[in-house]
Amino acid sequence: MRNHKGIVEAKNFNLFYGDKQALKDVSIHFPEKRITAIMGPSGCGKSTLLRAVNRMNDLIPRVKTSGQLFFDNEDVYSGSTDIYKLRRRIGMVFQQPNPFSMTIMDNVSYGLKIHKMAKGKEIEDRVVEAVKMVNLWDEVKGRLRCNALELSGGQQQRLCIARALAVQPEVILLDEPTSALDPISATKIEELLQEFSGKYTVIIVTHNTAQAARVSEYVGFMMLGELVDFGTATEVFTNPKNELTEKYLSGKFG
Image (cartoon, rainbow, N blue to C red):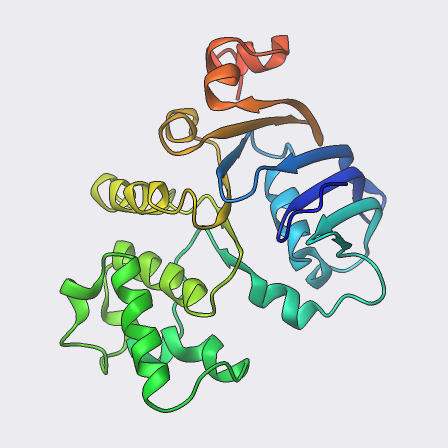
């Protein structure tokens, strides 16, 4: 195992929804502070793998796992894992923007308050910093006390990313973060993600191969719960190791 702080690595990891096996012996090391895209057809297990990293699948009844999934050299499925702290260090952004029905300020400061990471003027400073990081400040700087649900869909998604960033995570998980957005809003999210390289370990699930090629530095391809290909984006898109990857990229299925 590598001795780097904040790495994410799966070793022969399996996950079952009841009797149905969703992940099959997945072994993968996500390069630290780089952007990795996981792609594949619907139902291939890519979102399940993403949610496994911060144990979001625990919310689904009858989920079982075997094998190991490490974060910061600790198996997140061990009995000693503090899930509360795990989810602070590994932020998540979902397919549909999900701001809370509260002010923009309260949305972004929510994690800071529940984790008791800041108080008073420091909270406001951290909110402003996070909103600026997602290139949203110029659009909302006079509206921080307005309800976040008044924002457009693209603005709401950037707000959700700001909410994740405010608590200073080491890893950011994104599950199809642009699929519900218009092309202009999606482009803004992609440009934002590219700025994260070197700052955060980013894992993005996408069915959009063109998006994976644009934003990622590493790519994994999944099929029927198995990781069948992994490498740099250049390697996977120009010289895939697996014939299934080549067929998927050429549009023969998916």
